[in-house]
Length: 326
Image (tube, rainbow, N blue to C red; front, side, top):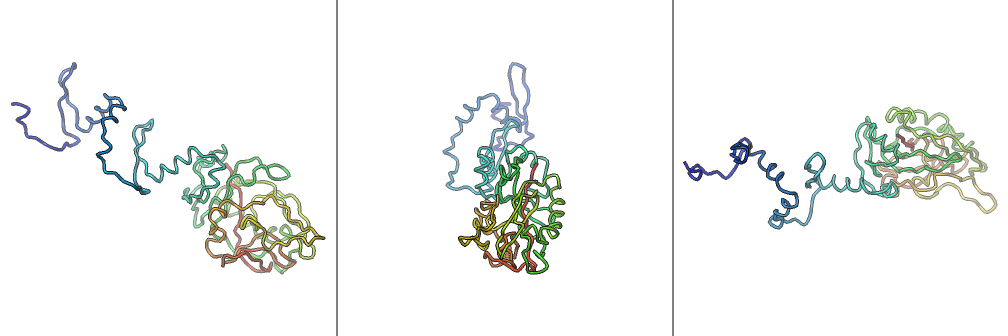
């Protein structure tokens, strides 16, 4: 019976068997192995040269779920356009460049050992501004990268991310009465009301992974003006106006004869707030800032999206910032 006499088919099943004849005799090969075998005996250049790409349907746009083929050490793999774009960026850009790109990716429900290693090495691969962890019922978002590096009376030399929660952790007073005596350091917020925030942050990321750095903080007020400050070890603090808005708004300026104590290493706007200002107040909540405004009030972010100040005895949101290390 001639081969041409057999029934003809136009499709192959993966378990179809074909005959192969050669120096080793006549053998069989499964249809599912045939293509890989053909590619293996030809050079990639010849194989690709034989492909007429012009015969494929041409497109002028792509979607995030479209896929590309990659040749990897483990073999050919597929990747979506979205993952390819961010993967290329993640592989080639510098730390300085990545802090100027907003992504907003969910990084998981826990701070992993691999993530810690990238921070510790200072590569920060896998991190862009706006990326976040969803731990428990809270979202913890990357606000900046190496914001405090080389700052402080003792220089901060530890690689770090700056994290801020999307919403306040709870509400509390700056002081029990409308006073700003002792400035931020003298406030009940600094002495007591931040403790619950520190507990929540340690529970989410581990106390050993929270950056300790040196901050210059206001510790005296004269006639409603911040008048003195000092260097303190810092882990978790309320942000100041500059970190949020990029400038001082309600913090009093000098009058030509008195120079307020406004020294700070937190002198530039956080990258998150600069790139995507809605994160200054993403949920229309009232949140405290640490700046002294008068003898009775501290700065605040309002639920209306405005810069403001409020009496120290009011209860508003505690939305702190902190550094995350590997």
